Image (spheres, one colour):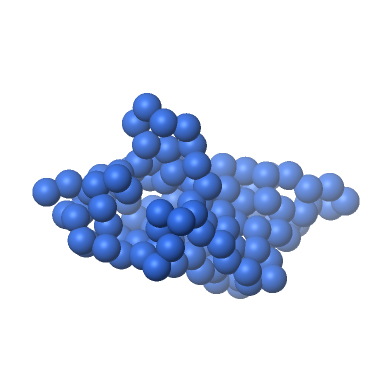
Length: 119
């Protein structure tokens, strides 16, 4: 069974930076992709950034140029560097991993980490 552990959330002033990390652990799995989602109060969860096994990345328009997703393949860890943070970035951020295990595939979610952007 694969588990994800997230860290790095917190309170930051507008214009500040934070880096989130998400580490996958378990045995016998191969990561396909690790992505970041977020859910703001009263809103639906949205996909923020994608990092595929081939190294391709994609972002929602509202974070392009400010957020960077990267992955340490050897450590099965994905990061989200967030710069120039805005109050509207306030949300619980979730990591999602899709993986192969044996002859099948599955996905798993992290527990979420709260990011609050406020002065």
